[in-house]
Image (cartoon, rainbow over all chains, first blue to last red; front, side, top):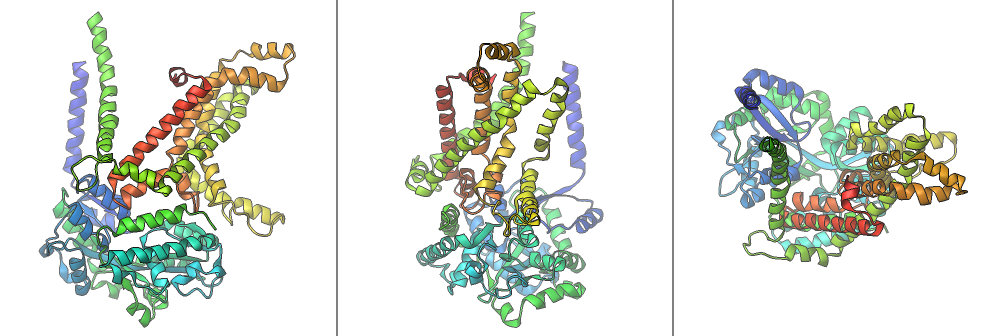
Amino acid sequence: MKKIILIGVSALTLTTGILAAQETLRIITWKGYTPKALVDKFEKETGIKLKITYSNNEEMIAKLRATRGGGFDLAQPSQDRISFVQKKFPVYQPIDYSRIDTKQIIPSMLEAVKKNSGVNGKGYAVPFCYGTTGMIVNKKLAPGAKDWSDLWSPKYAGKISYRLKRPLLIATAFGMGKNPFALYGDIKAYKKLMAEVEKKLINSKKLVKNYWTSADTQKANMRSGDVVVESGWDGIGWQLHKENPDIDFIAPKSGALGWIDTYAIPAKSKNVEGAYKFINFMLRPENAAYFTNKEGYGTASVGADKLLKPEIKDNFSRSFSKTDIDNIKWHPPVPEGFEAIESKVLERIKAAEVK
Amino acid sequence: METKRNRAFYFVLLPVLAWLMILIFIPHIELLVNSFKVDGQESWTLENYTDFFTNRIYWMTLVKTVSYAIGVTILAFIVAFPVAFYLTKVVSKRYVGPLTMLLLVPLWVGELITIYGWMIILGDHGIINQFLIDLGWIEKPLPLLYNDFSMILGLLYMSVLFMIVPIMSTLESLDDSLIEAASDLGAGKWTIIRRIVIPYAMPGIVSGSIIVFMLVIGDYLAPNILGGKSSLWFTEQIYNQFLSTFNWNEGAAFGFLLLLISSLIVWIALKVSGQKLERVGS
């Protein structure tokens, strides 16, 4: 008996010893944000092994909250979802911007992210990429779709899809001619606006085919032709355009919603050094350009635009006119308590019977 | 001798107890404590539970989830019983193994994959609709996906096997001569099934029903992906409390309500069917 235990214990120490010998960096990120070629390049260059977990904003917050900022060495939350989380449950550590190669980053974007993610004057994030939420449209089958309001147009009854999450509520408010971001300081008025949005979406529920839940279902909807108008991310719309030229991303007339995804370092990161290395690596112009060429999302890297493929530049100019760009509504940081209002609204919409 | 056996006994028991304590008991205690607290307050409160009963949307969702789960359990029995009977009593012994294997295959690929499979089959441009359109039987695709039909199909598909296996194991020990004797005494097919086969298989049916009911009531994927627009499942609401609202206290309270209600229903089912948990569980 004792012998077996002894062997077991020594085997255990041996394997943990081997595991510890290789430096690892655990990243929680979005699908597509760590292309294989760049992961291999980074591992070869630094000898740090990457462990990647795919997630989204809500899950990232919940996971980091559960471990009080442990379990991952680097995270990629959206810039508007950092400061209120940090105030409530301190899950991140402040970024030491002197360790970031800031020359590589578009200065205005860096400043904006520093400010929006800030708590007590300290910034908690570094911008990585940006994009917009707008509409993905099958131009052959729905030539007239131009604005958010087409998501409840009877013209496309049964061929509409969207994701039942907070960006939809904001988009619907813009489509109704309101500006929800202007009400971020006034929780009462915001609640009232959300009640109107809720009514609109419940009344138009019969027109909706389904609520998509991920990039995959978003693509499947358009590929199958079951859906002709859906809310969606620009990168996805452009990927679909490559497969089928009838499908494209459009910026809604009342304004596409702009987001910036960032790098933030969890409070209990075990490899802060590696995290900074990875951030600087990913924002290097040639690497950032590789990412954008592959996924279609815009990059925060300063020198990358010279290395972009012409088709990527085409995407942007095809979907965004000068006015569309000026009209992008960038997500301001979400104030605390607002997501609880939105969550109830979303639940009531989901539970509502189709009228 | 005696002490030696005891030592071995504790050696086996220890991991089981440790497992129960560390992975099941302690986290549940923490959740239970959480469910009686509100963020930022030290004192105990019932607020999370009263929230459930005062918001129609919450308890309605639970009522809906429970009634659908009961419905799926009954459907699973209707589908599973003939299959189990066929596999144990009708088909030649040689084929039982391979046929049971075939039943197990969908389990190997995982629930998410089978759900995506159903999406391909049921979609507007999916296999069934395309086939019917090509035959000229219908002009517009039938709405098969993203409604209660597809959701129930998905739930049934992932859970029916857990009904088949327990029924099979009880039927296996049913002596064929009992059926022959009944038949010789003039009983018809239905009478035999109703008065001999089903009562004999009852422990298997009840344990299968408990597993199916629990699987369905706690499922997240099928209602979420196949269910479409109005399929708010109670598990989804728990998920929302944890992930969208960041209200873990209320999420914990919901989790305990789900545990309580489903245990209650299982208890009632045991009472009504006159079965004992020990017998069903074995």
